[in-house]
Length: 265
Ligand SMILES: [Zn+2]
Image 1 (spheres, protein in one colour):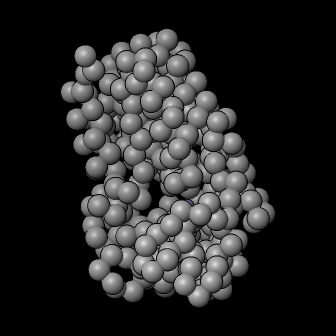
Image 2 (image 1 turned 120 degrees about the horizontal axis):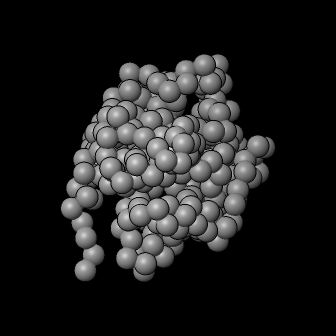
């Protein structure tokens, strides 16, 4: 069992920092997830994984989940919150600098939202410049590598839906499962993911807004590798979500343990 920062007194925190190897910051987003998943999906998944990691290793202090991310491109759908990438980078870096005052030398960001990557990369480089070991892990990168069949096909897709069925089943609106009306930029230039178009099978980054490609916010069209058809929302299940949460938790614990052996000269 690890430690939850928000539940400790400061003397307990001081002791926990001394007896552990790293601080884990879950990073989420409050953003539209189609008509069937809650706005807090990315936040809730990151928080759940952090809780599971905490329950299964005593090597970690878990900080509170940073809720808001960079999601400006989703703001055509109500309720989405966003910080600029610059503000968000500082929101990741500065709490780490607080923890460094108490002797923390290793940080792991457990990220639930792809839009946070640029700010995480910036913060991690700043930490490295100060001799600090930091890394960010994305659950969707991990699961796609652990199992070829767990290939994320878009946004609010069957994988995210499965995880939410396992974490907070009452928040999943199965009555709102519907295929999105996809929009494309031209016959040859198709919207194939968040911010991404595809031309003759090659992905081109175009900074698209989510509403450029989908009427409902759901993106479920991107095909997995090797040509098989992308699973629809009907393929989602709590059992699949549980399998993914368990496998990703094991990976993260393994990563944290190997990070303990890293030292910069
Ligand atoms: Zn999401």
